[in-house]
Length: 67
Image 1 (cartoon, helix red, strand yellow):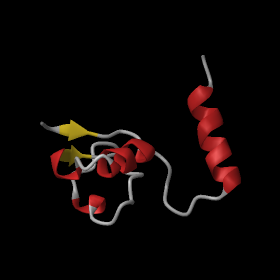
Image 2 (image 1 turned 120 degrees about the horizontal axis):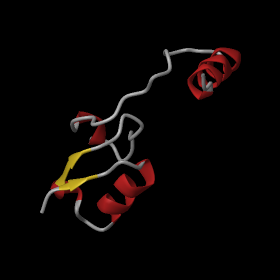
Image 3 (image 1 turned 60 degrees about the vertical axis):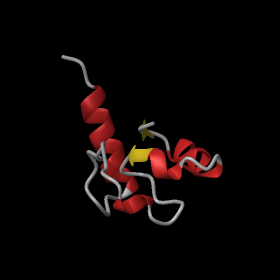
Image 4 (image 1 turned 180 degrees about the vertical axis):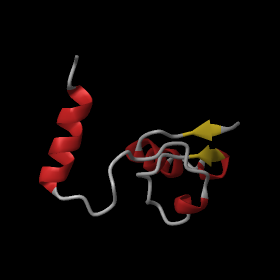
């Protein structure tokens, strides 16, 4: 079986069920259990690393604008 997890909590559950060896891809937010960081990341963030709360708010507001 091949499993892709797009939620960190689902990644943890897959491992808890003993299916960690079937996991073939995860989200950029998955960092537990140890070792999942080595799997291919199938998502990425649009936010710059280290952005402040106000910068994040401005970016989200800009994306939500409708013309």
